Length: 137
Image (tube, rainbow, N blue to C red; front, side, top):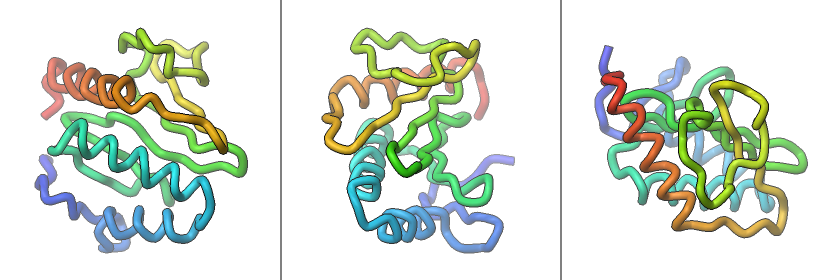
């Protein structure tokens, strides 16, 4: 079933996913919330058609023709896990976690880390292109 590209896709509770992500960012109220907000903005810039979802009891998910990445928050890191990261070129070396798997790759962002915005947006665009090439619409 194709979801509408309204940006207001709802979670199981019937609350728009975008509002749940907003609430998570506000709830964190520290560097993790600011980081999650920043990467969210970069994802939206890289893919204006991105669909925001709220899955697995509280994980922000960004999709376009399939999952691009998830945005989990931990005490010491914001983890962006790319569903098909092992199939993506990463010339800037952004992936720094979950490197041993055959499918996923992740970027762990710690307090004070700088994000290479251009490289990150290129990685998002590559993930979308890969999803679309596999016909998951």
